[in-house]
View 1 (cartoon, rainbow, N blue to C red):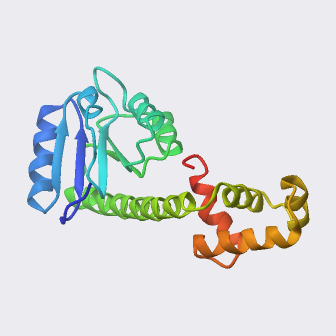
View 2 (view 1 turned 135 degrees about the horizontal axis):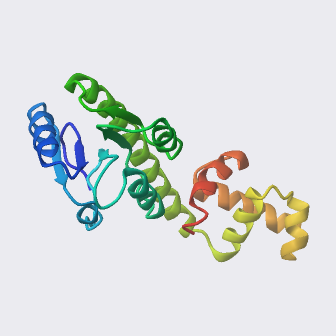
Length: 206
């Protein structure tokens, strides 16, 4: 889901004053802001806008920011995360970054610093959205292959040679070359290495 705007920011912080302050400031400079006091409410979102960033408090009463970050990873939520915290030890910061956080800001921080970090995160989000669109197109292309062509395609990206695939599938090399040519044409490439880059990210989807 997407709309034309500067970007979407999801604030997850049980500090009412901080939520209100961030919502006002970020909304004023052109972002669409959604705030949540309880991480569980955030998880009820059925579909998130894009590009987006999550501003996540490290110290919340119900769940720590690190634990919630892990929950998001388990649920395959890839939206970039910026941690905000009044106090955190070095190990928390290191773990948050290891888990993929874009930045870690200690309260109080200047709005200009936050905006710069948000812009960086939104660029990442836009890149992720573009990648997903390409993957969706490649899934559609793959689904147009015949059953035999799909078999040939998957064996090609495994690195098998034409002769090896021919023997495994029990077809002649001449027939297999025809299948390969059709696979490449339908997928829109003339190169097996490019075919690998197209199929590898969507193997779990096809």
